[in-house]
Length: 112
Image (cartoon, rainbow, N blue to C red; front, side, top):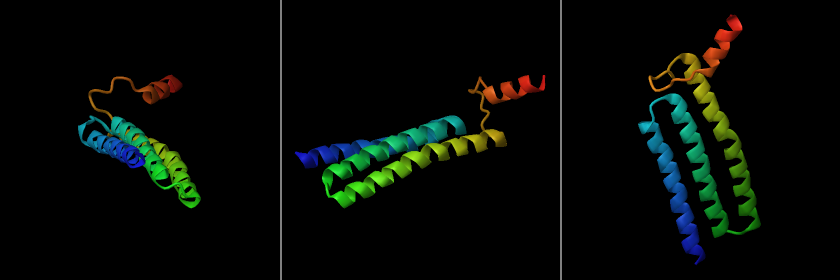
């Protein structure tokens, strides 16, 4: 029974990571790509690590996996934000589907 739960969680997590990869190809601009990839990859790895914890309950494995999870959940959103910010500042994040540009509006109001 436990092997089935671990298998389902691992497949679900891998599906979320694959969905993040698909988002890289299908989404229209760097801002949405960075957002989708960071969220789906973080959730996918969380589910995969949960499956690994269920599969191996040894104290050493649980501690290592929790540390990996914490490191991942801290770094992935920050790296997604850094990539999105860099693409915005370089000017590559302005496709026709983006209608609201709050940083540009804020900057325009400060200069008025």
